[in-house]
Structure formats: structure tokens, C-alpha cells
Amino acid sequence: MVTLGLGGGLAGNFKDGSVEQMAANVAVLPLSILVSVISWMLISAKFYNTPIRLKDTFGLNRGRVKTCLAFGLGGGGVIIPVAMFLMLLTSFVVNALADEAPEGQKLVTVIAEQAQAEGGLEFLIFFAFMAVVVAPIGEEILFRGILYPSIKQNGYPKVAIFGTAVLFGLFHVNLLTFASLTFVGLALIFIYEKTDNLLAPILAHAFFNAVNVALILMASKGIPDTGMIQ
Image (cartoon, rainbow, N blue to C red; front, side, top):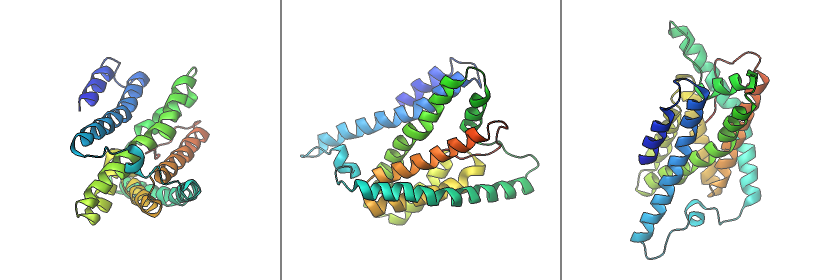
């Protein structure tokens, strides 16, 4: 909360709606997750005789690199068309029921704008790096690495599966992508369970976002109305 508050204060120093403010908002969440994880590890070390290591906690010391690559990249490839279909279906339903079409995901629009803007390469690289590298690591640590196993181990496996998947969809604060990203959350849990290693859903998440960034860049001559970046 402290980190989020400081990040919000920093973002408030920039012009509302500016690309600098968007960059500050995008950067603060992964930093907050990192601070939370470090704090959690330090606190847990005070209550356990044997300190908990990150590798043990997230299964990163179990090897299975080939398995993680197969499930991560292969799972990401399967997730993409299903998620896109759900997004298009949601868009069709919402447009049919609503008087005005809802806005697409803000980060998607900003990436498209920076791809078109003169001198926007630096911000474009920053946002793409955040979407493809930083966001998958931070969000997988939070959702599949901490929330999901914590709820499951406390005796609520169904709540862990569906609750964290729905929370993952809500986390991105966009009506058009809610159903598709809830499905993505369920798929990433499946990948995590099959590999018992957080590396696999991180790879699937990164691959999903990378494909979406590539599609945004290819369509950047006309800013897309919708898009999915987790």
C-alpha cells in the first residue's frame, strides 16, 4: 500500500492523461508486487525455523525447463485464439446492448499511439517491455504464486481456482476483456498445476502478451478499439 501510494503521488505530478503519467502508473504495480513479495519472505522467515526460499515457494528449483517451455509456449498458443474469440463475443454483446461502445484497454491504446507518434520509440519500448516481461512476472507471482496456492492450501480449492481467475479478469479493469482474461486466468492455473513450476505460466503469460503487442503494432495505422494485455 505504501508503494502504491508513493507511485500514485508520483503519477499525480504529471499531466492528466499524458504518456508520462501512464508510464508511472504502469511501473508502480510491478514494483508494489515486488515489495510485497520481499516483505512476505522476510516476515515468513520470522515465523518458521527454516526460512522459505523463493525457489522452493514457486517451484523454480524443480528443473523441468523443457516441460515448462512446452506448457508455457504451447499453452500460450492455445490460449490466444480462445481469448480473442471471447473478447470479440463480449464486444459484440456489449455493442448490441450499450448506447456507446466502451473504450478499449488503455495500455493497448497507448502502445498504438506511441507506435504512430514521432519520437515515441522510447516510450514504446518501455511499454512493450513492461507488457511482455515485467507484467507476466509480477502478476504470476501475485496470482498463481501467492493468492492461488494460499487459498487452496487453506481448504478452498474451488474458490482458489475460480476466485483468483475472476479477480485476474477484474484486475485489468476493462469490460471488454473481463471474460477473456478470466478464461486466461483459469488456463494459467491449469498450466501451473500441470508443471508445479511458476516458470510455465510466466512463459505462457509473456507469450500471450507478446503476440498481442505484435498485433497492436501491426494494426497501429489505425488505433484498435480493443485489445488484451494482461
